[in-house]
Amino acid sequence: MGIVYEDAVVISNPNREGDYSTVITVNCPDKTGLGCDLCRTILLFGLSICRGGIPEGAVSVLKLLVSYSCPIDGKWCYIVFWVIGRPKARWDLLKKRLLDVCPSYLSTSDIQYYRPENKQPLRHNLFLLKFWCSYDQKGLLHDVTEVLCELELTIKRVKVSTTPDGSVLDLFFVTDSRELLHTRKRQEETIGRLRTVLGDSVTSCDIERAGPEVTECSEGSCYLPPAFTEDLFGSEMHDGNPNGTLVSNPILVSMDNSLSPSHTVVQILCQDHKGLIYDIMRTLKDRNIQISYGRFFANPERNCEVELFIMQRDGEKIVDPNKQEALSSLLQAELRSPLRVAVVNRGPDTELLVANPVELSRRGRPLVFYDITLALKILNTQIFSVEIARHMIRNREWEVYRIILDERDCLSVPRKKIEEAVQNKLMGWE
Image (cartoon, rainbow, N blue to C red; front, side):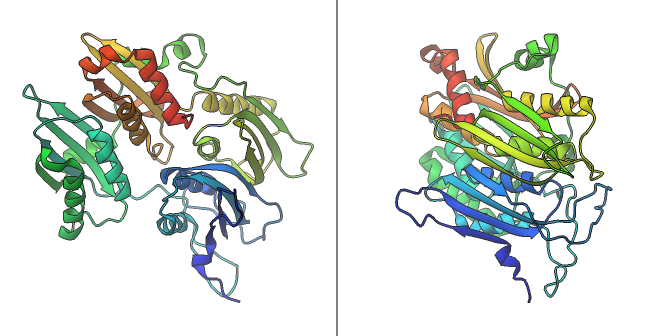
């Protein structure tokens, strides 16, 4: 019997009164890091995973090696997510993006082969979106960011400047997941949507392909000035303790090799936050850890239980106590501080700093700038300038957001309140 590729992802809306979760079922060949890629896509659409599972007993197919010799376990993957979030989520588009993540079939008559796709993501063309506004308005950046997200344009860098006369120059370096931004129709659609949002304040709006020098700069990493590194990572660098700890409840990570003959069982008890499962999955993916099956559940009190059956890249358990301790410590650190937030005085300016780790595949955390700008819009706090860039900090790449706030608004809103509001929005603790 043939397999219909579109059936690899099935999205079912709630069928019981009082049930607000939507069920997403993924049924496809497995690959290392598939769980991470699926969770990242769900997070990109503004949805939160409230529970889910990877059932045991998957169908076995041929064991293959992908291009850079990272072994996969060759099992058929069946994952169920229960998600909650935006009432007007674009479910058809979400299904399409989830299908893009799933390994493709080479045969529709037998479950024998699949195309290995655990590769570096394709480099999309970089475009410069430039517009002038005759005057600034509170929440402008968030409104623009929301439009770009709806259009599936990924923000790579932002440069916002306010001139002495109050005019605003916004430079957005973006890529298009649809790969159509070079066409006149797509550009007109984007400019039209932006003009609708910006209203009569916009004086000009243009889209052009970024030059090679800009593309290289956006893809390369540089080192963050010591002052900024100290603000975001100070105590962690001095005594090894995480700076900017966001989670207050204890995080318990245990490993057991006696519960399964072929897998190490990882059990995690922690406080829930937006992107929790993504943070776990990306941590394991970057260490080439294969997840064979497991389950996770979050209760209304924001307590989360996770149980995962994992293997090393060679298909063996993690039996070395030092490796177990290293992985446990790493998971605890990543879940305690999945990102860094600080509000500091920089001379006469008040600056908001946000940093999140970048996956080894060079993908950043979704919707960070969206959440930052939304939090500031709710606080009625205006943004004076923005810079987004990637930096190497302690041999790890981070995406760093440097936002200078309007000093008039900073006098009315305490720094601590700004920091807490941004943290809560990023962590989904509204």
